[in-house]
Length: 626
Image 1 (cartoon, rainbow, N blue to C red):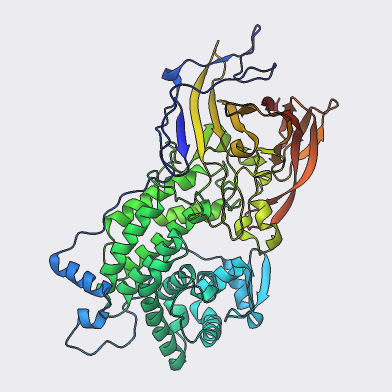
Image 2: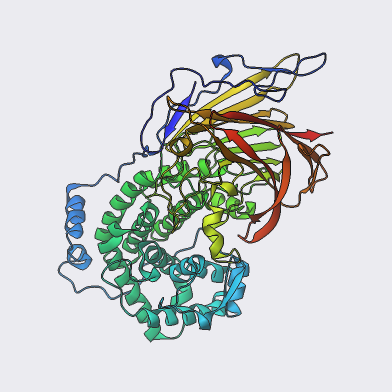
């Protein structure tokens, strides 16, 4: 069985199994012989875990709430631009600006960041910026993480977590007063500064509504009136501009804010009906059949979950039930996120993400109320997960996201991460999504490169082109995936075998990269083989440089073997692992983004050399000793 995952369509199933390449004593599959030694054999398709063919862009199909004829007419009229007051109460004066309910947030903020705000600073990924020195008008550009935090008002949740309301309200009023003074009028359309992207405007409106007590509880009636007016104006701006969003996740953010405004602002029924229909449609386009967002980013997955959690809190505040489709989509989103957690509950570093801590992930999942297991039936999400006792292997076996979905797109195809009992052994660098905090902005593109992931590169060229502003270009368009269970003979430990290949180097070098990973069921050994298979009718002459990179987890001490074809890894938990390769191994410096998005120095094992354009294979072994 072979699953072919295409970047833009269903490429189809392979007619047979992928080819196995014979090699030296470390070649894959593993068949050791001799008395008392274990042997892994492929028992055929009956032992395999079937993966249904999937499409990288298959969309989840959810229907908006069923409406009567009258409500459909109201929604249609509102879409045409008829004001809410004329539709909700045509014979009364428009209601004065006010909030209809107080929302209890479903998510807790960061107390440390909130404490920094009380002390007069924004704290974003380890960098402090004095409130008084921030240009809220956008003339002096902020780094992307600061832009998101400042203009989305995500800091309101942090401030709420940092103290009693009467202690933090003055800080919130000071910041929102300065922001309103710098942004007195919304532009006619998005793009006029970072404050007026659909993503930031939608998140700002949602945060204003959810954390309204922090900004409306002070003594200043003038400021309170300005804030309520700004809420209404922002909602109307989103009504007109949500379809001009920068990407699908931004559109979902805008629709969530529109729906929340329809719930919490006067005469909001037409806006709510309009928002619910747009939101369900946008979520159906954002989320694949298996629940993964099409950006393939754990950051995007978490943001989508958080948006729905906060919107559900708005429904609870007005004692309305959210649409059934909203709960169904939320349940679908949690399982793929859990698939990227390691044994300690923290996330792997994929598609711009970093090692987000277990407490943050578990708090988000708890807020959903969804109880589920990590995703195993992987299609569009593309991350294969293998659990072998205390060992967890994560393998990127799908094309990168299409350019229109990518915010921090990475050329990570066929990279993997490995952890044992929560200790990361092999990692990806991660962190491009937080570049602009302590992680320098200048590293953003480098962190998205193939070389920043634990996989193979040719001539230091990315398998998929990495462009500016988080976008990606041409490269990997198709990935073949084969997953099988392998039985151990004579009572020995079995294993899971993953085989995948990508065409990212086919156009330039005429080579297909194929990778095989075999993880024993006891988690004590990972065997791998990377193959370069020529493609096309006419072979190419000459040689090309290759590099196999294995970025090592934080705190690992490493030393080369005497023959320089291996290395010993001493882990912080006092376990010892041995790495062996078929070529010379070297050690180089690397970087890794920790749970707060801060750069940490690590090391990487590097196997490099020249290979013929006719192809080659490179076997390696990572084994726990003792």
